[in-house]
Amino acid sequence: MKKTILIYFLTSLLILAQQEAVTKDGKKVLLYNNGTWQYAAEIVTNKNSNISIPEKRNFNHPIFSEVSNSPFQFVTKYDNLKDNTTVSLNLKLSQMGEDLTIGSFFSYSGKNLITPTNVSLRFVARSDDWKYLRNAELVFFVDGRRIELGEMKRSFSIGIGYVLESLSLTIPLNTFLEIFNGKAIEVKLFTTTFKLTEEQLEAFRDYASRMQ
Image (tube, rainbow, N blue to C red; front, side, top):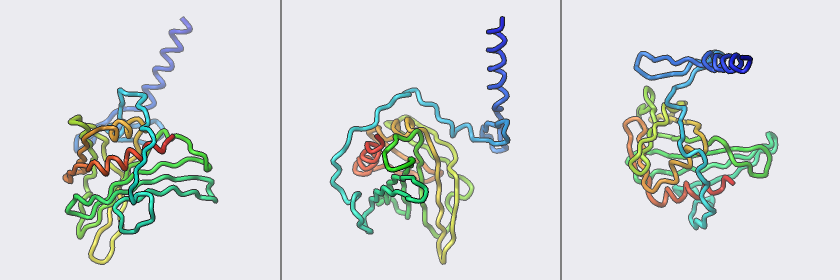
């Protein structure tokens, strides 16, 4: 009897911890009892709960050099004041007709690598007008399978004759690996669509191999 009451109590706490609601534009959100909320699409379920990190690569490419004109940029930076290390990858999408960069980063305490539980994705778009002001939904098509990641967080800056939009989203490591272990990857960011080249995919796999 006591066990039944305990299970009922814990279940009630879980129910009270979040409630589902629908916005005016039809998007589902989860409301938490601490006053915060989150798009339901941002909570990505992953059937493959233990996807392996790729083996170390021997990727001989300008990604590991400080070549300013290179479309690949890989950086490991230690912050002495915060005692924190950040590893980042940025790829200039040369196949695009617009100024768009895709990147990722993760961080850990100290200098000794700690495999992350979450990884951040980011896009930086530079154009003469707004592109993602009202909508920044991110979808990946991995080997023909659709993976919806939801709405990205937005920030921006305005220069003379251009708008710089920065979009970011944090996802579980397993979801990141599920995407970039794919053989063919297409990306849809609002109305912008593009396919990652084999070289770009290999850069992401090399980056992922450095997470352990």
